[in-house]
Image: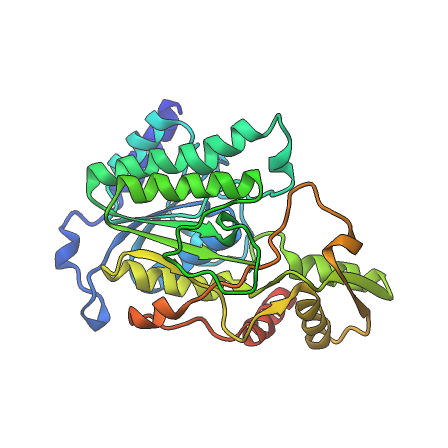
Amino acid sequence: MGDNHQWRVSELLRQDVQQPLSNNRLTGGRNRMKFFVTGVGGQLGHDVMNELLKRGHEGVGSDIQENYSGVADGSDVTKAPYVSLDITDKEAVEKIILEINPDAVIHCAAWTAVDLAEDEDKQEKVRSINAGGTQNIAEVCKKLDCKMTYISTDYVFDGQGTEPWKPDCKEYAPLNVYGKTKLEGELAVSETLEKYFIVRIAWVFGLNGKNFIKTMLNVGKNHDTVRVVNDQIGTPTYTYDLARLLVDMNESEKYGYYHATNEGGYISWYDFTKEIYRQAGYTTEVLPVTTAEYGLSKAARPFNSRLEKNKLVEAGFKPLPAWQDALSRYLKEIEK
């Protein structure tokens, strides 16, 4: 992390209004907050930055790339302050976050290539990002006494059975390297901090990146039939909807573990594909197959990705809309 990066952070901070944020009120009586968001080059970070800026909060985004490299859609995140940061560089993480001095960090950056994570020559890097990088951020949040949000996954569990996983379940048994390292990240946060939100999600899709919907639309254009597994069960998560919830959480002090996916009922990837094609107007035939019939992937996949979300409502948060509605809105967005 060279001097150039440090100069850029200082320049960003000079743009700030030099007054206590507690005196800076937003509509509805909420305090204006300063956020630091990692992974803004990805699906969720992109939407989180746009949501918090829309509400009048201040946000500094970051990712590993020298400049913002997400979708150039002209939204607020593309024009917001940005700093390049390698979260595995402990010294750089401390220097930059201390200088930005946020009220809250929303940590969206992660290694998410599940199959690649199984390669022996990648595992050290995966762990350094998902566990080590998260630990680096958590330690700075502790120094600043600021909030931290960590995005996790149902992969921390063994993916067996049919009972939905509860947010405070501690029966961890990850099936693969990705799940193990995300669990290590969870523990880094929960064992270092008290003011944290650990939010597990599943089957993520958003504008800014690759996802299942985009893949299946491309496949459906070129094939009369597609085979899709029908024995892995869960619910999708639209990053646009999740971003609203994450900012809601950070405007509160209702810390802890949560599960957050769209409502609309548990489905299989087969069910999801059928609805994608129905809404998109495709006539492609979808054939259900078991995971065994489809062929094993390099990394074991959970059969049970059902996440129980009652705790959201109990804490007073608004659940995400139905996944069918989310899919409809998303398809309209990607057509623009």
